[in-house]
Image (cartoon, rainbow, N blue to C red; front, side, top):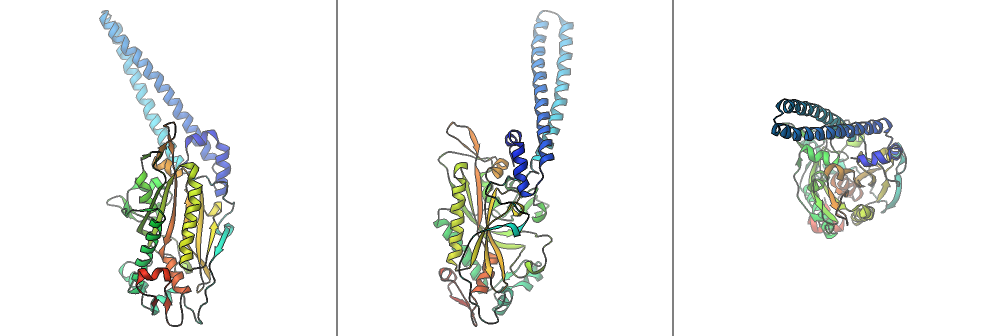
Length: 423
C-alpha cells in the first residue's frame, strides 16, 4: 500500500509512474488527497471541541464552589452539547477514514525506474539466456505423454479424485517431486536462508498483508465456514511472520525459505496452456523471502536472481531471464524478473520462477518496520522468489532429458532420487 505521505508530497510522480503499469491513477489520487484533507479538518474541529469541553468542564467546578448553580447548569448543558457535536464529528471521521482506506488499497505499487513500459508479455525484456538446446530423440514426446508412458503421473486419476489440475504422482514421479523439494530446500539453506514450515491456511489479514486481498480474491480457494484461504504461495504465510513487527538494526537481513503445496483457482484458464503440468490448481513450490533495509534491497534482489539462476544451471536446463514490463507486472511488485525454461517437446517457454522486490508496499500493509539510527520507525523492504515451482521444472526435466527408452535424471538430483533414470 502506498503511503499517504508519498501521495501528498508527490502526486504527479505517483500518477506518472503508475501509468507505466497502464493504471490511470489521477482521479483516485485526487479523491484520496481530498478525503485526507477532510479527515484532517474533522480532526482539527474535534480537537477544538475537546478544548472547549475541557474549559467548560473546569468552569463547572468553580461555579458550583461559588454557589452559582444556574450558571453551572448552563455550563453542563454546554458540555453535553459539545460532546454530542464531538461524537458526530468522530462518526463522520470514521466514515471518511474507512473510505480513505478502501481507496488506498486500490492503488498498485509504483514500478521502479528500471521497469520498461509495455502492455503485456510481448514487451518484456530478455536480460540473459543460458543452457544448451537439448538434443531430443526422434519422436520426442511432451511430458504428459511421457508421464503416461512411464506411469509416473496420472492426470485422469486426479480428475476422478478431485478435478482437472490435481494430478496424482506415482512411483518414481512421486520420488522426483520429493527429491526436487529437498534439493531446493538444501540449496536455499546452504545459501543462508532459514527453513520454516508455515501453515497452508491463512486468515484474511495475512492475505491483505501481502496484497493477495482484495486484488486476487477470485484466484484463491476460500474455506467459508472458518474464513481461511488456502495459500497461493508460501510468500503469504512466510512474509506475514513479520506482520506488526519492529525489527532491530542488527536483525537484517531476514532470509527465509519454505516448502508448501500451493493452491490457485486459475479461473478462465484453458487450451494448451493448461495441458499436463503447464497450469495446475494444486502444485508444490519452494519459496525464498527476504526482509531488508531499503538501502540494501536491490543488492538483495540481485543475489536472489543469481541464486535462482544457479539452481537452473545445476539442473542443466535451457533458460532465460526476463525483466517484466509495467503491463505484465503484479499489482504489488515494484520490479519482477521471471525465469523461463525452454520446453523443446512443446516448443515453448515455461515460466518457473518470479523474483520480485516489493519495496515498502507490502511492509506498509503489514506494518513491518525497523528503527533507524535516530530510533524512528521506518518501513522495511520485502522481497520473494520461487526457488523453485515444481510443475514446469518437472515438465522440462522429463521432456529435455528423454532418451530412447528412458528419461535421464540430472546428476545433482540422483543423491535425492536414489535412481539415475526413469524407465
